[in-house]
Length: 220
Image (cartoon, rainbow, N blue to C red; front, top):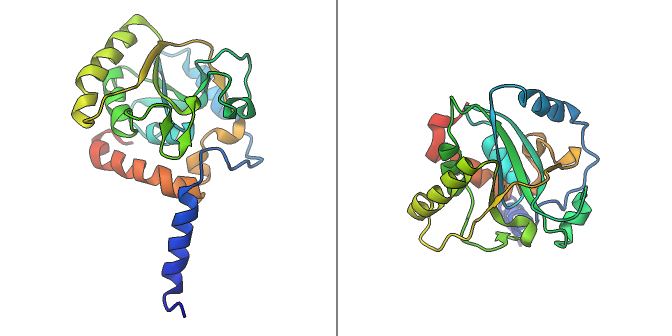
């Protein structure tokens, strides 16, 4: 009856994986303590940090990992009221936290303005508390600034650059960074360790394709 079984299989795969939301995969994961240690070491260098929310932190991490001047990217949680939240806590949407990626970058190589240009281009800042099928305040678009200069740059970029990319109102939150909690080990480096996972293929790959199209000159 079905003459093109490979095509049918691919169609079914695309249909079901489209409805996969960030975090429904719960692997035991590989111990990635080295990533955390590296991030701590980089704090001692003349580098700066940026903390961004753009939906699932797997996406944000994947987008920024290969940018020239970005030294480290760690997935985590911020913006909420619960102390030491777990991923299970975050998923309730009741802790107030957003899934974020915290970047350590060399401002002599890439500026905060340039980081935000990538940020605006690789996620949708016009949808309130959602990115695609990831719905909830934990998936909100947000810039959590580390100092007043980042706040100034963030507001300027939101008002001037973002509207050149999107024709709908920008709903991105710009707030001071509070406590940042590093996410569980299995969330770190997720895209690179799980490139064939459905969410990575259907949701993250198009973001990486857009990154390569728009910012090839900034890739390592």
